[in-house]
Length: 192
Ligand code: ACO
Image (cartoon, rainbow, N blue to C red):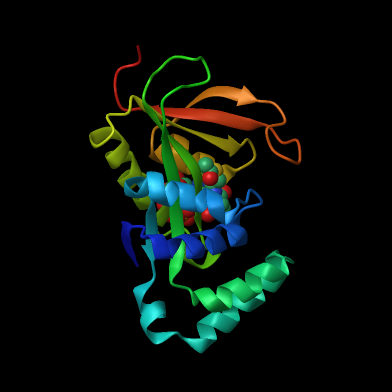
């Protein structure tokens, strides 16, 4: 599995990966916006072996998992088109203004996910570190922010323990099902 910058033709596959993994989904237009404006911050994990050999067994395994975990009919059709090529992604952008109204240039992680079949291999860690590097070096961001469900143990383990994010705030009923979100930040430069 290799990590690389996303290209425009990856956006659809990133969307498919998102549909598989998260209840927070976005219109394709929103992916296009990220791709056109913030392409240097978008990274994907690509399973080259699956792409080259299109292993039928692998695809049917994915469909079985799909039936067990997700009853959205869209995802099954999409996955067959995807053929397992993009197995993880980070969708990110830059923001100039933050919640406090101060003009501190900062990055924001819109969405991150890795297919179940490819988890615990360090892929999320790698795509996150790649986008962090660009936010820091290219955009000279002061910090990067994100929202995460308070119950998301795996993501919290990654953000807090592995990547050094701190909880900035808790936002009540942030998600559509009323779950609270941690608003987290990782600082690249000294806090003002
Ligand atoms: N339980 C506890 N900690 C975990 C778990 C887990 N199941 N999975 C990962 N971690 C932590 C560990 O600290 C791990 O380090 P270690 O392997 O040395 O113990 C670290 O995260 C890095 O793990 P990776 O292998 O890089 O993570 P992975 O590629 O498996 O992806 C992710 C983690 C993205 C959270 C994945 O589980 C996933 O896609 N989940 C569903 C979608 C999701 O929740 N996305 C985040 C939503 S928030 C947002 O998008 C801004």
